[in-house]
Image (tube, rainbow, N blue to C red):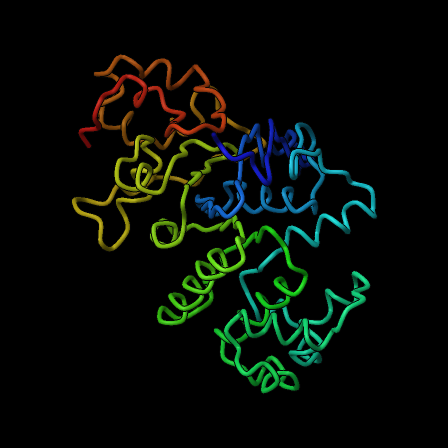
Amino acid sequence: MTTPPLLSAQGLHVTFPGRQGAGPARAVDGVELDIRPGEIVALVGESGCGKSTLARALLGLVKPTAGRITHDGRPLDYSGRALRAYRRRVQLVLQDPSGSLNPRHTVYDAVAEGLRIHGHAGDERAAVADALSRAGLRPPERFFLRYPHELSGGQRQRVVIAGALVLEPKLLVADEPVASLDASVRGEILALLLRLRTELGLAALVVTHDLGLAWNIADRVAVMYLGRIVETGTVEEVLTSPRHPYTQALLSVLPEAPGTPQILTGEPPDPSRIPSGCRFHARCPALASGEAERAGVAKACRTTDPGILTPGTEAQSACHLSRTGAQPAY
């Protein structure tokens, strides 16, 4: 029996007013996504694809234009008290620990801040020490009176994670959690997130542009392009047998990837001017190589929207070519 999702986006849209006479910008344009208890989902895509906006919507920081978010099967309530309670259970870990931490606050105060905001009635010192210890800063008392500038980058990121753990959440939303760290420290933080999943049953949505990171940490991958999830499946399905040309191109430029990199030409289209048909068609290597034409789907690529992917147990791709079963020859 499939475990019910802990957090779910259903037909989610987030639209912002256009600039300089342009139409509304559809930053998130019909996303369906489930995150189950104890599961790590990697949300992957280029800058500007909408993944950070989707993450902010899931955190309740941006109210959707349409669709809904459910947590433990209940629709997200945007009243002040309900959001306050929700944010104890769903915590954000930001990319840049230096920007996340107040330089005037000690480590103790940085971690205790959430407890104070939420009116924690228990032993504050014990809760802060436990969170720091779980985040790998031991003995925790040695870090209480330190300031951010006295810590390494990896230690600062651990303080940020401790600040999230102190509220005993069920889900972390980690936005590029290791992008600012050295390669050696990146592995330590990823190992920490995996350990927290094992020890605490924590689920996580990891927002990243790095498919290599997804391979190292995720159970499932959702690939996002221009406001939509265009491919989803287990990490093995998506990263060893990608079906969408966008995913294939992203994987091809990894240092360890075999063959010739598929360099995508041009910038992603403006979300206020989403093209007809498949939103990736103007940059698609399968169209450029003639593969889509040979498979008889070139017209559909340019004129017919492949539709919105819905959560399920099977790998899915919003691609006309992949649905023919054709193997790309580029």
